[in-house]
Structures are given as structure tokens and as C-alpha cells.
Length: 271
Ligand SMILES: C[S@@+](CC[C@H](N)C(=O)[O-])C[C@H]1O[C@@H](n2cnc3c(N)ncnc32)[C@H](O)[C@@H]1O
Image (cartoon, protein in one colour):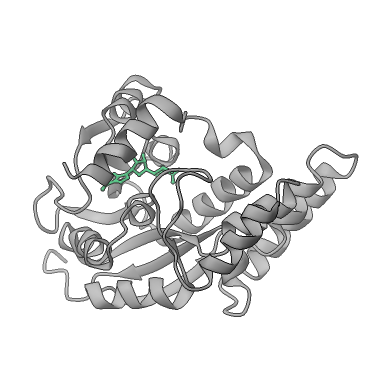
């Protein structure tokens, strides 16, 4: 394992509790609701064979199993794999790297890549991870690829009253460079522009790519209102506009997370 990947594993094993992330804050709750809605629109009728790459402790995998799908989870962090196996319902989970998936060609009806892409600094590694997702998906099968928007950090710091001179400088730097500075927060990460995510998906060979903004343009309002009397009303309204503007090109980049959806081209000979 290379040094950067080793540090990402150490971060999740010792410094950050990924389980529960999607329930802690309005941004996470919007992310979970909208991601699940988009996945349910994308997936074929249950039971489908779904590979969840970078699935973490299994928040989405458990929902999809409950929907009747057969889900296999691959993650590079051993603690996440243990948590995925141990929860209810238990998940068929293995340790593995998105760049070299331990799965046969065309062995799944759909593949999710919701996490690894924003932990890979090098474009070649990100394209390789998408190529792997395509390889293990049957022709005609769906693929979903998540990224963190280039502008998510500064917007988050504004909405949670943590914006200072250092974040102002970081906001300027992010215009030209999407590599995260782990000393400010998170771990080694890469933050995408929308066009860049689309380009990486196409370079890997993904067809019919559409990029969605997951939390929608009003997620910062939901964060800013979270402790006030209007918290629920603002959250509900933010969710409503997230649905309306999901793939509106002029607003997508304002979301904290981007979700590129596409298909593996070619004919499914099993039909
Ligand atoms: C923020 S979590 C996202 C978890 C879940 N998919 C979700 O969307 O809530 C990112 C996940 O990607 C995993 N990950 C990072 N780099 C990876 C790689 N190269 N291969 C496989 N998993 C990786 C991490 O261990 C972590 O579980």
C-alpha cells in the first residue's frame, strides 16, 4: 500500500468515525436521502447484483439489501469491512482497493463507487477506479460515481460559522488546485470540478454520463438553520429544491457531493 493510502486507512481507523456520518448533520441527511433516491431510480428491479465499492460500514448497502438486492461491499479500511459484516442485516464485505477490484469481469448488474474517487489524488488512479467499476459491471449495467465538489469546504465553513482568514486563503487556492490540505481538515482528498468528473468518467469509458448535485443548492441554508426554530422547514425546503435542481448544470457544483451516473455500453448477451 502506498503512503497516502496508508494514511487514509489510519485516518478512518483511528481518527474518524464514518458510521453515523450520514445522520449527524443536515448536509449528511440530505446526502443520504438524495443518494438513495438516485440509486433507487438507477438500479434495476430487485433482486439485482450490486457491488458497493468504498461502501464503508454499509449505510447504503444495508438499505439496498432491505430493498431485496444482493450486495457485495469492497472497502480498503479493515474496520469498515468488519462493521459492514457485523451490522444488521449483515453485509457480504471484503477488504480491497477500488483500483484493483477482487471481482470477475461483468459479475454485477450495477456498481457503486461512492467514496474512493475523492481519496485518489492522481487522475490516472481515479480513471483506473472507474475503469474497474465498468469492468466488473455487465454490459448495459448502471454505474454511480461520487465526488466531492471543489467548493464544498469553504461553503461548509461559511454555513457553520467556521470561516476564517485561513479558509479565505484556502478558498482562493481551491480555484486552481483541488488537492485537500489535511492540516485544515479531513484526510488526503481530491475535490472535483463538475466538468472534470464528467471527463474522467468518459475517459474511463462510461456511457450516457449525467452529473447530479446530491444535496442541492440550499444545503448551506439547512446547515445554518440547524439549531434554530426553522430547522425542519428549511431542511424540507432544501430537500425539495435538491430534487427539482438535481441535474441542473448551472447549480450542480454548489452541492457538497456530485454523483455521476452512467452505464457500461455494449449488449448484454444473457438476454
Ligand atoms: C466517506 S466514506 C463513504 C462511505 C459510503 N460509500 C458513503 O457514501 O457514505 C469513503 C470510503 O471510501 C473508502 N475508500 C477510500 N479509498 C478507497 C480505495 N482506494 N478503495 C476502496 N475503498 C476506498 C474509505 O475506506 C471509506 O469507507
